[in-house]
Amino acid sequence: MSTTSKLLRVCSLDAENPTDASLREAFSAHHERLKPPFPLTIPAPSEYSQLNLALVYGILTEPGFAKTHLTHLHALVTDGYNLFTTTLINLSNESYTKLLETPRSQLLWISSILVKVAAVKVETLMISLLRQIKGGDFSEPNLWLCAELIGILVPNWDWLVEEPLLMRSSLFVFLRLLADHYRLVGRIDLDKLKKLEIEFCIRVLREHFDLCLGIGRDVIRLLQDLVYIPEFKDIWNDFLSDPLKFGVSEFMDISYLYRTKTPPHYLLLRITPDMETQLRFLLTRVKWGCQKRYQAWFAKKHFCTPGSESLIIDIVRFICCVYHPSNEIIQSNVISRWAVIGWLLKCCRKNYYSANLKLALFYDWLFFDEKVDNIMNIEPAMLLMWATTVPIMGRSSTLSRHGAE
Image 1 (spheres, rainbow, N blue to C red):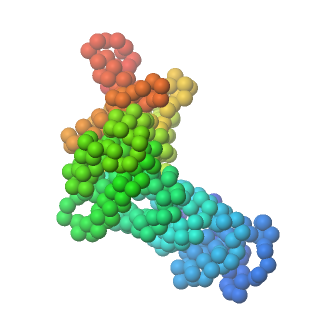
Image 2 (tube, helix red, strand yellow):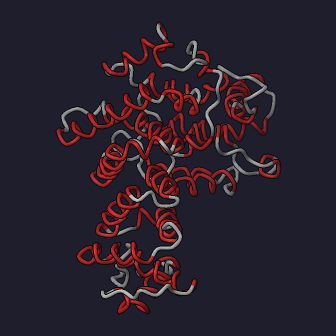
Image 3 (cartoon, rainbow, N blue to C red):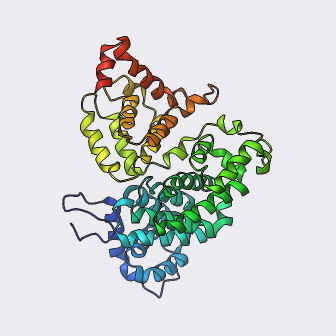
């Protein structure tokens, strides 16, 4: 294990991370200038950029001096924290899983500060961090990230209301996570987190249901998984018997949501950037006949812990509604989406997860409207059903062979 990076966990065989290198070089070049007293002059654009990078590195790697660096940042900033926040977004998207413990903790700390000052693009940073929470993962770092993010959102409610995309994104993520967290009993450390998640989701649904409509039909799919929680049972009863209670004139009954397709943005939230990269490789590069080794590697990486089966449902929604192959991919020898989903179905060992996967697969088909829905969302379900009949009907020896693989 290399010890040269104070920011990322890297191995001796890893290539140097360009983001880490640029931050480290900026910090090294301007280290002396980061100490008080700070100059009162406005730096040139190139100098301003380098000082921002240096401050990012200092805040993330020097917690003892973080408040001093933060004071310098407040005095320096002339762009609404745009460059500083953009650097953190890139770091989160590209390298969150490799961040060392101290930089990771500092990233959440500085994110909370940026929310308080309403920094430019801070809502994008929060959405990026929400994506890093992995479904079906009960490890301490994952639960810590859940607690930290909801701990930032709740105290900054008035700001959150002014960021509808972030509010909807947060609701979608925590509704999905509650389905995992609430089923896990005997974990005292989870009780407080579950309480916060329930209170947050209920407040959003009760006070800002007009914003929730933008999520579309998948909000109903998630709520169906939570109906056994008393607070959500009341929500569900109001959906069915008293929809006007939500105070939204166009929401006359639950069919309104069923007719509204879910934008891909929300489904992408439940796939981490690393996982998205791996899935896109599987769906664009792996040829028929070679898929087993890649599928085994992916399963070993993501499906080997208790509860990780719930992640499979998120992946199916991603494959159906987010990743739509080009005509070139469709006509090539790359493994098809329906075949990957067929493999995922076999990875579900419990009937509960298998049933939820099938619902995720056919969900858009149940409410399909050619005026608003995309045929590509239901194509994997149609082809998977057709492929299962091939060996019996003898329609295509080629498809039969592919299906068997």
